[in-house]
Image (cartoon, rainbow, N blue to C red):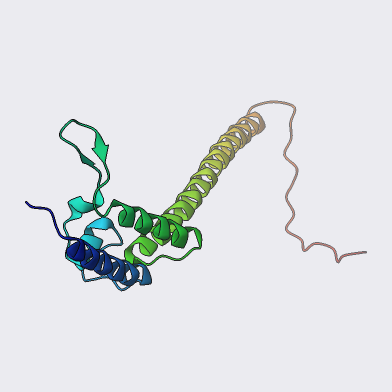
Length: 163
């Protein structure tokens, strides 16, 4: 592929800047993201122009539009720091990440409460079993021949309070 003329390069840079402004405003094409791939598609230039190249001797040289890619990334980072998300999908991902974090915290709290309830249940059942054994022992002692005597049960109404 041959080199492009200065006028073509200037025209491409203008197209890239216009596409950059649209994308950073949030005017994304259907299926597009706020990234270099979409910037290249919207501006009509190849994406490889945004990345560094190598000379024949292996030394690096900047790509023809690498400075614009760096400007795009810088402006995008500034928008992110300001709390603005030009890409609605990226904003949705951030919102969902926050929800996932909150739900994980709630799940951990619920699991802790469940463990506490399980421990309470285990202690309660242990106490009930011990009480049942004591009741059975006392009934057996009552029915066995011994010097224990059962008191008569009366079914009278209780006395009024305070008499």
